[in-house]
Image 1 (cartoon, rainbow, N blue to C red):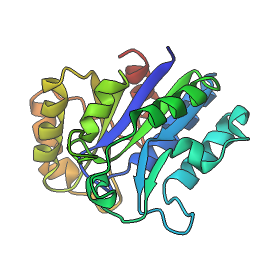
Image 2: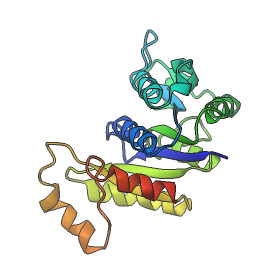
Image 3: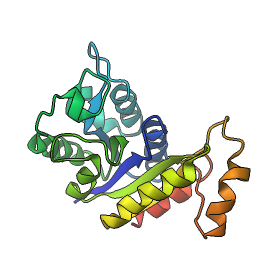
Image 4: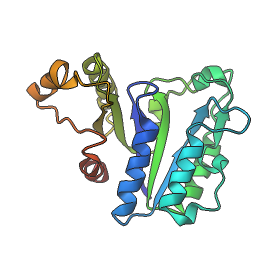
Length: 215
C-alpha cells in the first residue's frame, strides 16, 4: 500500500488546499511521486471545482504521470450547494466503492497520496459517516491544519483530542496569515508552556513532511 496522508483542519477556510499544495511540492522535490485527491467537494457549480481544479494543476506540475487525469478523477464525488456533504447531497449515502476506485487509480501513479478533506473532522457526509471516519477507513496518517487567530488553542486541542480518541496518528501545523501577528503573544506561549511543538506551514513544511512520512 502506498503512503497516504490525510489533510484535515479545525474548520473550513483554514488553509487545507494551500497546505496540500505545499506538501505536494516538498515531497516531489524530495524525489517522491506524488498524487492528490479530494474525496468530496461541495460548491461545484458549472463544472468549476474551487479546490479540485487547483489540486489537479498542482499534481500535474509535480508528477507528469497525472497529466491525463480529469478533475473528476481527483474529486470523485461533488455537489453544487456549498454546505456540509450531508446537506448538499440531501443525505445521499456515501458511495465508498466510488472512492475506493478513485484512490486505487491514483495510487498506480504515485508513491505518496495526499487526501484532502472537506471542512473539519466532524463535518457530516451522510447519516452514518463523518469526515474523521474517512481517515480511519483509508488508514491514513493525518495532518491537522489549524489557524493562528484568537481561539486557536481551543480549536486545536479539541480537534487533536478527537484524533487521539480515534487513535489516529497525526501531526499539527499552524497556518499563520499576515493578520495573525498576535499569535506570538496571545496563543503561542501556552503551546510552548505545555511542550507543544509549534510547526508553521509556511516556515516548517520540510519538518512537517518528515514527521508525516514517519507516522
